[in-house]
Length: 193
Image (cartoon, rainbow, N blue to C red; front, side, top):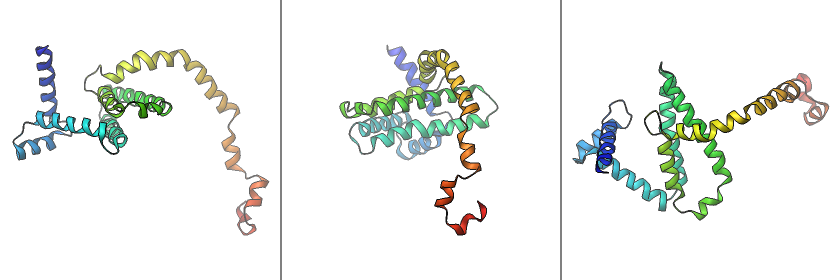
């Protein structure tokens, strides 16, 4: 157990000192100004966030910012890079994030019953975006979303194609105004209708 803990601590320390990460300059400055090791600054920050998510004001906003800001920043960097591997990683994250957001909307009543909800969601989102090729978003996508998608994508594609072919009602509305629309429009404006 202590070997596993040491490995986690070493990996975390390496990530906190990685100059390619956006948090490194801030942690370096805090470490220099306070004399406190950046690992302890990070762990203290996590403790503060955990406390805030349990008892603080705007816990939902804090949690959603954590699930959005860093992934959005890293996604933009992935788009601008030459590698497609990081693109796939972050696309997977956003698919899982979107599905979770939709499920969460319908499960909103749980929030009132479960006081640690925002803390659990925070941990879940951090797990989804964890560094590495086999993080939470890959696991959730491969075990839950992908099988469901593969089972139902043909029906969804057929429905979308049917709507495209037969139900393109938006073009009819925008190209020629109906007589009802002319009644709503003052006579002085009818020169373009």
